[in-house]
Length: 289
Image (cartoon, rainbow, N blue to C red; front, side, top):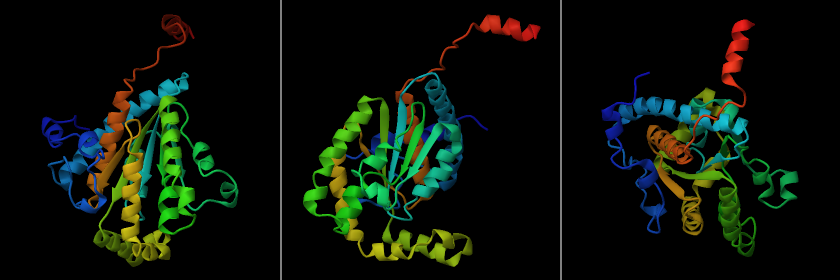
């Protein structure tokens, strides 16, 4: 694989971790779903860079995993939020798929099971947190309990409203314990969502991905945007900031998340763990065996 070229480096005019990070001025209604913020290249450039940066990501993840094997409790938690067809599944396949699966803890949160409903809404989340040395991936997350429940009035406002403070406290607890949280909100346009749903209907190999409820949910797009705005406003913290990604271009969204993960891993300043045995002695033993 070719090394990261000078041209490739310059394609990011602004680092993804900087330009995608939500601020007090972030407005969901203002998102240009087809834009590629901070990246000046085209699809072919993005795909080539994804392969190159995937090698970087893989190398950093191996160091994280190696340190976890020797007792380091630090971890990364990637939180993926977005409506159906936003690209969460593709993110797992095409981005997380570039690293060693041994070092990944993946959890997908759908409608709570009977057992889960009998517990506090964070119970199932705590049970799925990444172990030390792992990259944890949440395909949907605890945010469903302030998004879907609010949009569909599944519980009264006085129930879900306090959850914002609970979630902030929960994420602060994780951060203090050594989990670096990367929160990603993926947004596609109604037109692109329709196109992706149409593809699922047109292709027999994608029928299994189609859910009639997805069309029903399209009728709630304004309510979901309001709910997502509330989430960003209430839970965008220094220790767990939101990254808002326009995702009409799948290649861009995948490249952006790759860059966010690399940035997070580099913040850990990882090195290879030292040997817990005498290397020279073992070399001699091996030679004599």
